[in-house]
Image 1: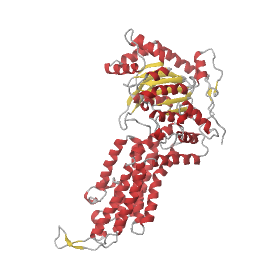
Image 2 (image 1 turned 60 degrees about the horizontal axis):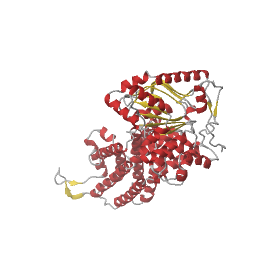
Image 3 (image 1 turned 135 degrees about the vertical axis):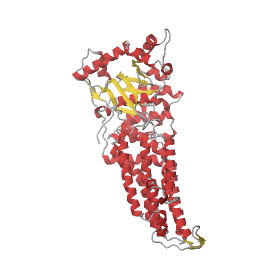
Image 4 (image 1 turned 180 degrees about the vertical axis):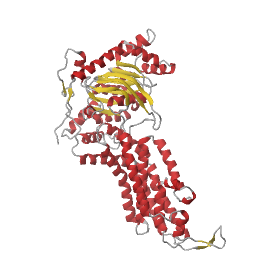
Length: 609
């Protein structure tokens, strides 16, 4: 293991002989990274499958050290501005974003950034210390774990909560824990996406104090996006960026004090001032009155905008002359081994699943249902009623294997937001998480199949095919649920969509109606049809069921209601099915869904709808 600690940010800054007489140069050297955004225009989809709308229009900013806020009454606009600065949103149609002389999208800058977008990353049934250890061990090999954790906890005001379980913490404490999980790498830039949504009024002063400690006396750059400015938060700000909800037009960008003067001298009536939440009220008023364009134009021609343009010009000169400080990060992401990292990630992922009681209850319930119905099937008579009962039992088992996934939608949405947070903070690569996710989904279903076969093989002739098809059907459907989650991470909508698809699967799987009675495409779109068709074919094929002579056909009088297994399969449209064919089909579908899931992981980003 490498002997690595958390160096001071001041100690890690070294200069390439800057121009000491220049105030800009002095600021750059002292404060580490200077973030320069010039002429940024961005179009983005607010919701999946919607057309792109203008989100940022001519976004300019120079941010260097201290605490800054990007304020908009539209949280989507402020979040996108934060993503542009973080180097995550790369779809800008024009403009440049540089951190000193480094493009923000480069790994050379990204390794210096801590981006807190969600508290879902915190493991609820673990202690604060365990969460910090996970964050540290995933990205850093060091012998100074306790010291690093203590320093991060002290900055975030969590020294007394290190041994408390996260589920017992308040929303504000969970937010501070999520921040501390990024501080273990001592980032030079800390970005917080809409942190105020986790706070109540009584938390504002403590959070403001943490922001000031985070900035390390303006050595570290701290930027938060928000749609309100409570006075304690406003009081610690060094700079403000105001963005209109309509197309993200720039209404102000610069120091907080100049913002107050700009509003008082050039926008508001004489003698009227605006501070804190009063500024947010102005944004709402301008939007309602249609004054956004006027205010944006006023700022564009103001002295503050002229000074901003001059700062951007000098930033370009520093880039050309290579006079920025060299930011060396001794605490670089460096896990011990890929295997150790995978074990950590798999343990974390499974623990997140097991901490939800519905996960355990659902699988225990499915096991109990399987054993009960398998036992009932074994006791069926070898006649027509027994044949009908067996097909009902097989359908019930397979439908339960699909329905169990719908109960995990909430946990999958939470897992998605956790994945996005960790991916953007360089915990792991996408292929790594993809493998762990595949194992996480496959493991309980494989375990179910093995135990199901072991306990029911002696009472149920189709135990091996049935348990295998149940596992494969459930796995394919779980992949479909996860794929939908990556494209629409809204729990209520996903639950409704999956219930509708479940009803579709039941209707067109061949249990309620013969698959011959509707177009083949309808049944092919039902995952349940493949599992049910293969299992029923294995159970009935080649069996001679005795006739019920007392039951007369409604169509032909004096004809007994009597089918062999093969005749019934032909009648229902399953004569060409087999459990092997169904298993291969489900495996191929799973591979296709896995490929689509991998692509989705590459492009996914959290959408708070």
